[in-house]
Length: 87
Image (tube, rainbow, N blue to C red; front, side, top):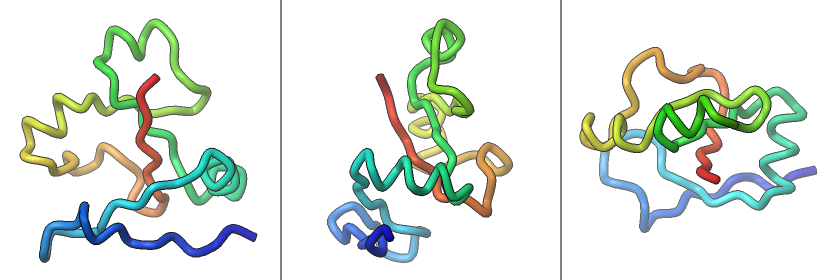
């Protein structure tokens, strides 16, 4: 069983949604296997189109930065934990 995710207070802005947490690869795999997580590739679309992890969604970091750190509405499934990565 995976330990509960700990909020990383250093990454959380007051009153701005869910805090960020770091995951091990094993924790990420467990969330994905349980259908509780979704992989989010933060590289630009050209790199994503070239190759990406199976089932990953594309949300370039530049898009998040342009929205002042907010994820555009409808970009990610609201019922899953977003696991951001770049490779």
